[in-house]
Length: 202
Image 1 (cartoon, rainbow, N blue to C red):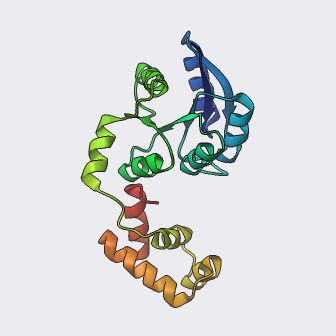
Image 2: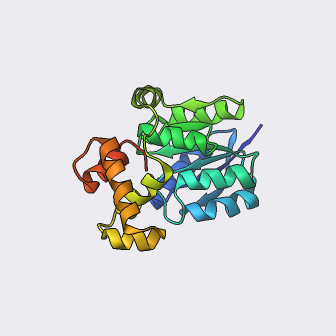
């Protein structure tokens, strides 16, 4: 049986290398390749892949959001997250988005090929070190709104600008930022942002 694959990675060289590598396998056929998350669903609808390999950090939509769109629009397509960022929070969010596999990019080629074949058999495949880190880290303590406010604070904008962008009052934004700072055990919003980002909570 031939396993049809869709690749999504914004790094052209990485994507081409992965395509070439996977095409060497007798039972794999790459039916689509895109460099943006917002092109994933259309490519999947056109190529009808069995498995989509999605990078997390892409323009348009990130891989986690693209995985959720695929789960809704092409439910027969299994999603494997393939990423440089082996962060504990990413794994939990990927599974929530419908992904059935999570492989870090520095894994050997045979590990990726094996992961693809295993998810086709109905298994979940997760990088072991990342699975342990995820269990140790626990769930994100941030609420959805606290997460939104921290993400909006990324560019260093003022509380007033965050409030305007999210249609909240400035007092509410300050409350969410204070809560996020307390929950991350940090001293200010930029430290909170960095800590939450490092743990994959954003």
